[in-house]
Length: 431
Image (cartoon, rainbow, N blue to C red):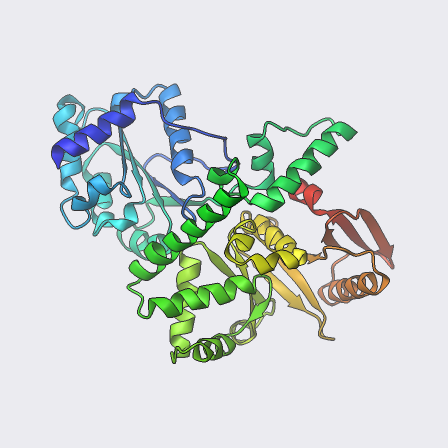
């Protein structure tokens, strides 16, 4: 095992790491704190860690001071239930004079797959001269393991699939002059982003390969990040429930209805099981629930919730019928963009029962209302969307709100209120 570890350590040091497209994650490195990057599988966490390593090297750290391992590598399977101390034994057998004299930058990718990893990291912090950088595809990694063992000695950063701005950068498009040519380039790129989504690996794949790859991601998330990680019983019921939620992205769900669905397809399981499954999907950063906005936590818990996928481009690859509802894909895209910036996202229901797709809290603590409507040109649709927002603004004491559409751009003002109607591609860049 020691020789395999030495080979992997040496490979990283001698081969220039792939850095890809720079990400718009406003992270900071803090001395004495473990840097933790979490997010859905295949969203680019490993590449971003390579970007950090290259920057550290540019700032003066020699490559010999990097210890980087990817625990999804099957050559490290023997470590999963063995002693992680072998990692230090391997590294310091290569560089014995560095022990406790030079800072070693330790990059550990998908470390949550290793038993008792948190005890090993805590010991490194306590007794070695190391700076530590971790990635994982589990929110539990933060809430349980890190919270109990590292006791405030870590800072966590969430990474998602590419935003539209990051996709433009990947395509070499940098909007800045506002010309009509530039606008057409951006709009053309948006249509590609709408179709493909934000997982970086698939940007240059054919449609067939893209669909196959999305489906492989999905299988890997279900098997490794849900069933295996949580030792989930009834794997087929887990898969059936995930498929049901995906097919209803952007729609309301309740635990009772999901339980009834499972019974209808032959799974006589409890509501607690359904609740656990939804939590597992969220833990894997794959599916997200949005609650109704109300000051009462009890009402938030009892009212139906809305469900969204981490990436809009993945949805039609898993359920082609979703393509028929472009509004739901648009709404999922808006959710993903909001979720990159805040966890305080809700939907709102007015006293008259009109629903507003999103109420979110910005960095200043200000409530913001946002409705999503693919096409607002029909008079009845326009009247309904404007009336619902106007009523919500009045109830919440807000003077502005937004409607995100496919193409329409205008501002509607009435009685001191302003509703800004914004094309999706522009909204994604402005926000």
